[in-house]
Amino acid sequence: KGEFEQTAMQEVVDTGEPYKGYQEIGGQTYYSAVYPDKAVAEACISCHNTHPVHQERYPDKQFEMGDVMGGIIINLPVDQT
Image (cartoon, rainbow, N blue to C red; front, side, top):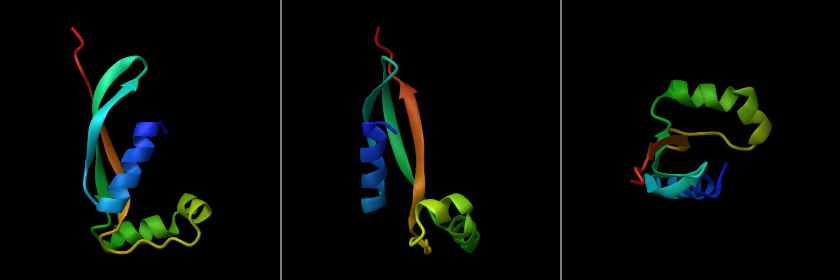
């Protein structure tokens, strides 16, 4: 992850609100937005909490309803002409 994504994800987890801004990707400027992906159903929670990757990376973290479990990232190129 780049600096923008790291900062954005921390803000999204801390606030539960979207994070928006500009970033450079491969020499191109993008307007980027990161939206919280929240636990909205028991199925989300049970799947994420039992997923092997989650258990390996975050053995002490168990998601609960409403928790931010990740982020949805949208990158739109900015026309530089």
